[in-house]
Every structure is written in C-alpha cells, then in structure tokens.
Image (tube, rainbow, N blue to C red; front, side, top):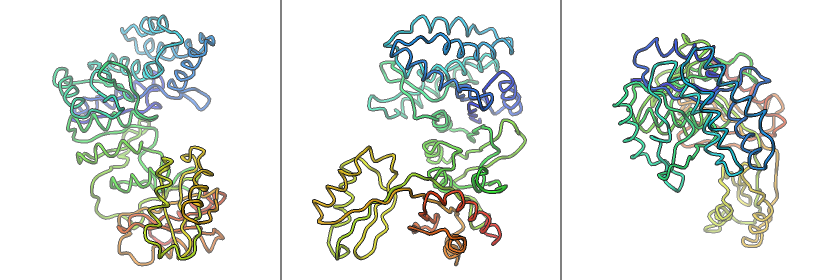
Length: 436
C-alpha cells in the first residue's frame, strides 16, 4: 500500500483534481490519499489557507467578510461543478458561514481548507472521507498522541480500504482542532504512512524532486535521484524548501522511503529519499539560508576557564534561543543564532553575558550560512580546500566554518550580500571539478 500526499498546487482547481485522479488510478496500491487545501492557480492568485486566515482576522475584529468568503466558496464550487460531483459543498459552506462570529475558533476555520478539499477529492475518487479530527489525536500539550492516532487511523483504513484524509490538522481529546505548523500537510502524510506501515510515502508537488541547488540561484542544477534522510534534513534545514523538516522524521524512524514527485510530470521518477543510498557524487547538494547573527564573546584566557562555554550557552537557554554554531579561539567565542529567533532579547543577552562572565560582547549581523552536503564526502581529501578556494578566488570572504565529525556537511558563514553569488559559484565550481 502506498500513501500519497498532494500539495496545494496539485489541487488548485478542477483540472488539477483530474490530474490527481489519473495518478491515483495508475497504481492500485495508492489507496490512502492525504490532501492540502487548494493553492494558487497562478502567481497573482491566493491560497485558500491564506484567505481563511484573512477571514479569521476579519471575524475577530468585526470587519465585513462577504467578499473573502465568496472567493473561498467560488473556488470550491468550481471544483464541484466542473467535476459534476454530488457532494453539496456550497450547502456545507453556507452552514459554516451561518456559524461565524467574533469567537469563531481560528484553528477550526483555517482547517476547513483541507477539510473541504478532502471531501471533494473523496467524492471524486469514490474513496471514503476520513476526517483528520477523528484520527489525528493531539495531547493537550500540543504533541501528537502517536499510539492513539495509529489505532484510530488503522481502524478507519481497515473499515473502508480506500480513504482520503485532510492534512494539516487533528483534534484534542475534547474535539477542539489543533494545527500542525504551516506546511503541516507533509507532516500528516508522513505520520499516516508510518501508522499504516506503507510501502512508500509519495509526496506530490510542483517540482520533479530535489535539485542539487536552488534553480532560482544556480544555473540549470542537476536533479538528485537518491538522497538519504540525513542529507535531506541538512539541506531542508538550510533552506532547500521541498519537504517540511518535521515530515522526514516519522517515516525515517519507520524506515519508509519518500518519493518526491511532480503532478505536472507524473512519469518523472523524481527523488527517492531513503535510509541508505549507494554510489553518487561526493557532493549531493548545496543550500543556504540568510538571517543569522553572531554574538562575539571576548575574554582573555577564556579557553582555560572551566565551564565557560556552558555558562555562555546557559544564557541563551534562559532566553529560549536555539544555537546554530559556536566557533571559538583562545580568547573569543562566537555564538551563531537565527536573528528571527532572538525574540527581541539580543541586548538582554549581551548585558547578562557581560555582567556574569566579565566578558565583552559585540554583535555581527547580516550573516548567511551555506551548507555543502554529501554522504560521500567522508574521507575524501580536498573537499574543504576546494570549497574555500572557489569562494576565495571569487572575492567571497568566509566569516566562519564548521564541519560535523561525520563529514556529512561543510558549513561556511559569509555576508548576506554574497549569498546568491556564493551558491552559484559553489555549484559551478564543484560541477567543474566533478564533485557534483
């Protein structure tokens, strides 16, 4: 049995629904379908989820919402009418609108994008609709109750055999809706695949798998045919926006392969994500992310002071700030964090570091981190020097470097102004050297 998840662009209108049906019918093992809310039909369009968030804001503050609701209703009605479905989506939407008030729960409202998408798809495919609120059970602390969710989902699948499940949400034991993080339909799909012990988890989107670098930055990057879970997580974390980071771990733990596929090019084999992958080039991919800041902590002889690093890191822990890297020297330690995660606590952190540790602290903003990732880099001489040489020969100054002991990833920190240039240079240079 295969679990298939379709993203918003794959469900944007009736024509996309028809493409999905052809894909499902091509392989009888595709008996579980997870769907997102309809996405954009064109660049100037709106995602249904965005419209629902806007509608929720209007309801909360008592602003007229007829135009927004009409836009949402017309999108779903177009799908129903064009596909000649019997499901009365207009009637159910009108009933929903009749319940609107300033106290309408936003989580419930936003989840209706996936809910109506799944009901329409179930009607179109002739599958049973299984509400995520009935099978994805959250604990009251917001964590997923995996044992109970698995039990409920298996029961539903055993009962119906072919099901469509809306992504993105589930429910607390009292029935209140809870959402995964944005993009969370990928997470739902991964858990569904795990709970049902799927042969493979197919994630259908608008790209034919994963590329060795961002196509918007590097020139004609190569597609990746096979990649390991660890490589994917490294690339995803550093900005390769294909799969939601949290959607990898559930299937990784169950040793279920993920196949990234393109609804617009269904015969393309895409990218397989697996526990182990043989062969391939030294470098699997390059990714980068902007928006980092460095706290540079200066103190004479700090390297000989027992517990100094722990004391520094405990200050960041106190303020709930996660740390990316900590390059250090004899008298200086840098703590690299995402500026967006500082929660306006930068100067409180500086003040506490200086007052408690007797150190001086300076800030360095505008950093970009770029990751060169490859399972086959381990033990291969000269990869780091090649990376540094490509950047140095082209005038890109490296502010920091880091490499994990398993040699899976080389991280370089540079100025944000050089971000796109550096990725393009690294891709071209590593390709020219036969390393990609």
